[in-house]
Length: 546
Image (spheres, rainbow, N blue to C red):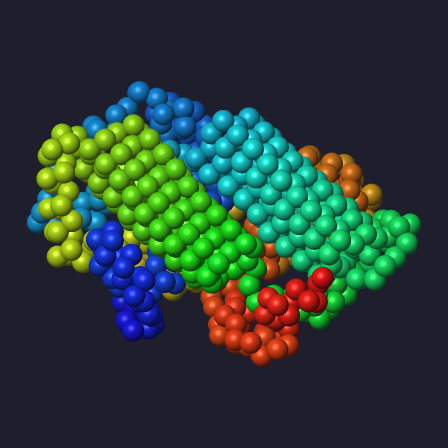
């Protein structure tokens, strides 16, 4: 058992862990898994966007970097162009100073890309996204159209306020679901249509306020109902007060439904939550089609990887965030179509680089300086040995080097800190500024009409004051049209609060040992022992739903 250097919590390093660390030639970690994850996520700003000017062409752009950042930020067109050269910022490695200190100096001068968004149309307010059309205020969206205020949406259309919703159409407030059509407020559902307020339902049609159903049609509060009765009840839900009462009754029903200890599909020897088609994957969450991994989150098709977040298609990686089609990567942030990358930040289409910033089609660079292959292969082992002596080798970049303020990143979502605590730890903090909405008036959410049909057209010129945070927000025309078409209440919460509430429905990324409440079998689950839900082992759970 080791003690974390940051929080002093004890954590275990297994024989399998040691085998992995030996394979990639890194020392055992000094931070516990949670602190390592926090450190990585503090480098990931997904949804805090700003308008500023490109520092090269002066065009007004949308960026994940606030205008007050000291480094240069280029629009995507300029960043990918030949109007600048990353080699112009190259420098020699200084063996008398810590590597991270030298990296910070390089990082402060090399231009950064405003955000990552490619092959998209009318989707400038989306980040880490590609091949989309008419998308707004989203992240991790791919091959989709008309998606707003959502993240992790793939091959979908007409989706609002949803998270990890795949191959779906006409969805609102859906979470961790697949193949939905005309579904609203659905969580952990699959292959359902015309659903409203569903949890853990599969292959269901025309159901409202149901949980744990399989292959059912025309159900209301888990009981068979006449189709016309369901249509009439659905129409009544356009009233906000009626919807609130229905949701409360649904939550009471959901609490009675047995929960499976772990969401896994076609997987062998795995621990965590939402692990599908995997083998030998442990302490991992939202991981698919992978094997021999540990401490992985929101990743797919990876093998032999530890401590990764948002990693797609890769092998032999450690302590990384935001990678795709990349192998043999250690201690790096945003790596795409690149191999043999060590301690780099924003690497695209590059190979064999160490300690670099903003790479594109580069090879054999150290601190952005060009080397021959022979000199590169001689110098890198010397740097690694030096970093071992300084205690830097094997560690991810410190949070203090992140280009973002702590509360701009998703680290604050999973590991929330107050401003005072963040500053006490030496972290940057972004104070909220008054939003210039240029509206005719701001109205409290409580003053909104109860029924969607009574919402006036000029609400598009108003701002609504969030019920919880009091932060004002606007309704965009596409939203209003969607709400009216599907008889949905106008949201009373700011879209950031809606996102926070939605992902807050998931269990924490932590495991507890407890027993199946039905048969007493030992289970390891994301449901803490003090939770009120009835948690079953897989065998007992399957008997209840089939």
